Length: 94
Image (tube, rainbow, N blue to C red; front, side):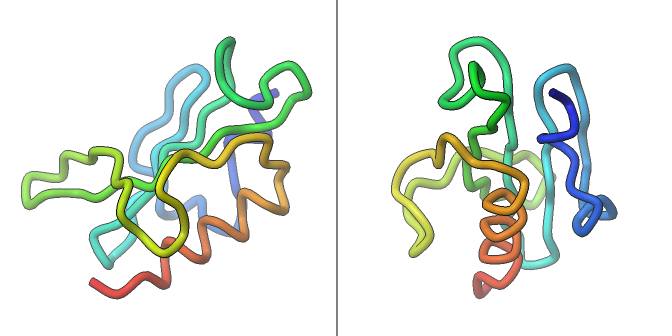
């Protein structure tokens, strides 16, 4: 199940890995938390849930609900959808 968390295309942007979660950080100050554990949307089917993160000057990321990508978390994402969303986040303006 951990393969759903790890994107080969975006692995150089992983800043934290722990059981059930990978955190990605992009140069534009945005990133993502990709999770797959009990209670997340899609866990039962081996799918992940993605939250858009905004990082502050200290490198702390918090969920950002105000982007053109989503105003919530994105659940039930397979690897293709995960990479599509990560690409959209990476391309957000600073």
